[in-house]
Structures are given as structure tokens and as C-alpha cells.
Image 1 (cartoon, protein in one colour):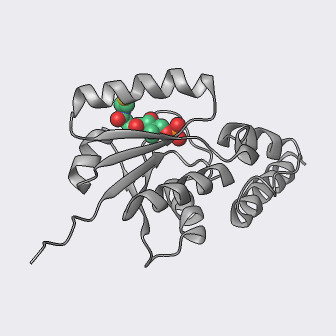
Image 2 (image 1 turned 60 degrees about the vertical axis):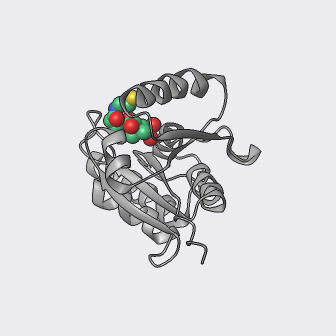
Length: 171
Ligand code: PNS
């Protein structure tokens, strides 16, 4: 009898501060290629995130409800250590353009240097989200710009609440 093929797991890592529609698109594309996808939310980042790890996880879980092939988890320390611990065959990253390419290639090569077995797979985003980043979404939302078509609704609501909170504090 032929043995069952091994389930192939990929990790989509990031700060997800906050989750954007570009991330959602990337995670869904990864789920088409791999049997299981773990969205790895980095905690203890040296940079101060706008949202707590709990909030960032909640925002991902609102979109990818538990029970399917996509799960959400947190990690700290080296990504390659986490990938090995989870038995991942690949790390999936999005590549929006040349500026991402430089940085992401450097990280992919460092990760390969650290852990030969784990491959990095780059996926281009949907053209609709090629300009979307968490940093720009936060900046636009903080200044009162519309981001509802760039992020999931729960994220838009949280960004709006933050803005309201900031303005109330200032009064
Ligand atoms: O969403 P981000 O902030 O661009 O994600 C960056 C992330 C989390 C993928 C990267 O910072 C990372 O892998 N951090 C874990 C620490 C690590 O492994 N550093 C060495 C990378 S070569």
C-alpha cells in the first residue's frame, strides 16, 4: 500500500501590525500551495507595535476562523527555529516590488544560512494590494484617511477606535 503523502506546512511570518488585505491575499495564496499554513505572529519585536500581540492575533483569527487549514500562532526568537519546531517545509513571504526584494532576499539568504532545510517562497501580491503596507495603513488611518478597502473590517474598526481615542485624549 502506498503511504500517505506527508502534510506540507508553510509559515507566513510577520508583525501583522495590523493585518492588511495584502496579508490576507498572501495567506490565501499560500494555502492554495500548501496543505497547512501557520500565520506566525512575531511577539517581542524590538520595534514597538501599535497593537498588542493579543490584538494582532485576534485580527487574524477574525478572518481565518479556527478549524480550517490556516491557523494562527505566535513566535519569538529566530524564525528558522520556530519553522523547524513546527516542521515547516517553507517560509512564505510577499514581494511587492524592488524595495521588498532587497530586504527579503537578504533575510531569505540569512535564514538559509542558519537553517538549510527551510525554503523561502516569494509570492507577488494581487495588483490591488501592491501598494499596501501596515505602516502606510496606520499613517493614513491616523490622519483620517479611508482604509476600509485596504484592511479587514475588524482592523478598520480598531484603527478608527484608536484615532477616536487619541483625539479624545487630546481634548
Ligand atoms: O511583518 P514584518 O515586520 O516585516 O515581519 C518581519 C519578520 C517577523 C518576518 C522578521 O522580522 C523575522 O523573521 N523576525 C524573527 C527574528 C529572526 O529570525 N531574525 C533573523 C531574520 S534573517
